Amino acid sequence: MKLVAAFIFLALARLATADAAPLVLNAERVHLGTPGSPEWDWFENDPSRSGRLDLPFRATPNHSEATLLVRQDDVKQEWIVELNGQRVGKLFLMEADLTHAIPLPAGALREGDNVLSIIPPRETDDVILREIAIDARPIAEALHEATLDVTVEEPEHGPLAARITIVDEQGALASVIAMPGEMLAVRPGVVYTGNGRARIGVRTGRYAVFATHGFEYGVASQQIEVRAGDSRPIALRITHEVATPGLVSCDTHIHTLTHSGHGDATVEERMLTLAGEGIELPIATEHNLHADYSEAARRMGVAALFTPVIGNEVTTPTGHFNIFPIAPGAAVPDAKITLWPPLMRALRDTPGVRVVVLNHPRSIHSKFRPFGPENFDAGTGENKRGGEFSFDAIEVLNSGAQQTDYMLVFRDWFALLNRGHRFTAVGASDSHDVSRFIVGQARTYIAAQDENPGRIDVAAACESLLAGRALVSMGLLAQMTVEERFTVGDLATNLPQQVRVRVKVLGPSWVKAERVELFANGARIRKATIDPARADAPGEKADIAWTLPRPPRDTHLIAIAIGPAVSAAFWAMTRPYQPTSPHWEGRAIGATNPVWLDADGDGRFTPPGN
Image 1 (cartoon, one colour):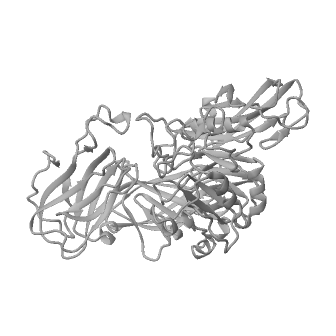
Image 2: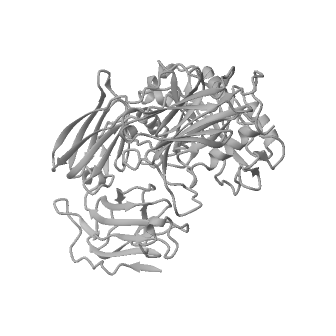
Image 3: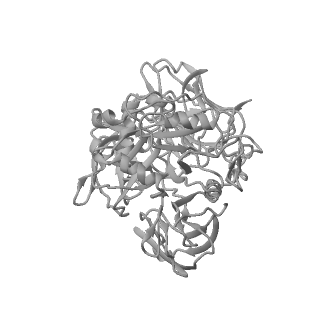
């Protein structure tokens, strides 16, 4: 059914010339979706309109490229944009308030009556549209009315690779463009620079400009107003707020459009995003492909900032597995194998491989959910498909594929540990994009030498990961010690009758921490509320000490720190891609791997399920 909004009138004005204001096609808020079936509960009292949106207007032919500007919000699926029945683009895939610029080729507009159409996908998707306009100029001119010359530095250390976020006075990510010759990754309102410099074209107006460098750093911002022809220098300084000595920041799950064929980040852009988000050990995990990012890192001038690792997301009909490191020239394992025992053998037979990670175990791909009830007993950790699980690590946090119940995969992991498996928990971003899913938003901190990010000992880092000497982070970082000398991955022996446990929670100033929970063999045994005076402090947000009676049998301890999701435009956390409910409350999370308590004093760990 065609939808012609009643408030849209047939524009009597002609298409704007280069010296005139853009032709406004829509100036009202329009909610498109499926009436009676809101995607999220906050839409329940916000009725949607169904079907396509048709906006009639009058114009003259464009003899050169023109620019369509669409302010959109909450776009999850592909919405096609047509002009006079011809596809000219699609809305930008990102669940954020932003202005998207779409080029209109010469001749797309015709004399007199025209119709702009926005066509919905088959899937349920509530979207909000606001200002829609046509600028007669090509994108290179329409988005370059003024220039921002941005520099990002760390005090005493100089230029810093960064994410630069530009938000307009309505709170939307602004349409921006890179100046010629700049090596930048640019999307609506987002610019990644590998060297701390960026020359950016913007439209006239008022903006807030932010600079960040991932989880460990603070945020700097500046309010500006620019007029046509302005060239404005902006100097932003951000400080290192979260100290992580002896810990390497790793994203074990990364993609590019270049190698995986979907998403929007080219391999060159991916190098800038990795540098800008402070990822020191990125694992290349393209689908069924061994990818080496080293040459691209050198080409983009960021090779000294991280150590790329050749990996592969082996994408099978019965699950996705990341394997790494992989020896150059190794054959790709057979992704058609569906039974896990022979598949695991094929993965481990790949030359160089030390680590096998089960990815997003609660997500559905190819109509298969690895930890669906038909495949996995969430109470006992049993593999219903036969045999024992034999991977090395499991994604408990995937910031690109979050769960409606943020503890769901943690509980799955607890069941596996109770069964006797020693699987290391990891966090990863699964990012295919420059801005939609932020690379390294969920990440894993691995115990390893980190003084030289460009020369990390990959073998040593893998050994630490396999030993469980790793921390999972998505906005927060939790560290735990037992008796002041045992930490994650350790077997804590010779324990006294009263066992001292200490948990520290770290995070930058722009992430808030609310509480810390302690789990023993998967059951929560302690909970502490974080002092509000420290909850949004930079660096250390909490230092919690508990004294526990020594348990009667061997016990694994895990600490999880929790806070509200980051909603700020410069690091906003995304919603579940496969939600199980229209209700969702996002969380910042920091989780440890286990400290293994040898409670019976026999010098080894006996799983509670045995």
